[in-house]
Image 1 (cartoon, helix red, strand yellow):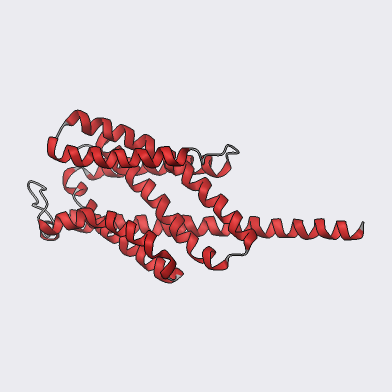
Image 2 (cartoon, rainbow, N blue to C red):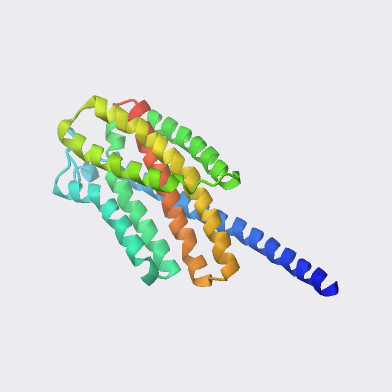
Length: 245
């Protein structure tokens, strides 16, 4: 009986330690994501409010990208794929540095919004996105419902969005752009809840396994996933509700 009580006590201590570790882990995820998001908007604002800097990437009047602008536009997509492949070879510090570099390049690719939309509407949409993101992430963290079944469906939705956006670069159809924006908001809203729950569940599984090497990098990958959810939801909402200059 004494051994049983000892085992229960040890299990309780271990569970409490994992709960505390989970809170620390999630705080690091959100903090890293927040720094990356702030860095993105600082870079975007710096280039998007200066004709001299903006002209390095695009024509300030037509907003048409030059060669470097096209490279910067697609660079974030390539960097995401490289990050996933290179994560095992990067240290935790290296992964964090790469994430901040990625956030900076994303800022360059988004700089055009400060030329195309009013500053007030950008701030309003940013606030709306922040409130929606916080609520959706809270749902993903607290819900008892298993959201794992949504994963493959949402990923297929993202692929479909990318194809539709590339096609519409040539068609320039307002109807397609509007439909893509609505679907984009819905898909990345779902991904926010899904990714939050996945980050939480993955931490718990690896914490029990005492996989310290994984735990050192997981917060960066989690921050990247939530960062992408936030940025994409913001961009689609801006297309829907932003006031153009």
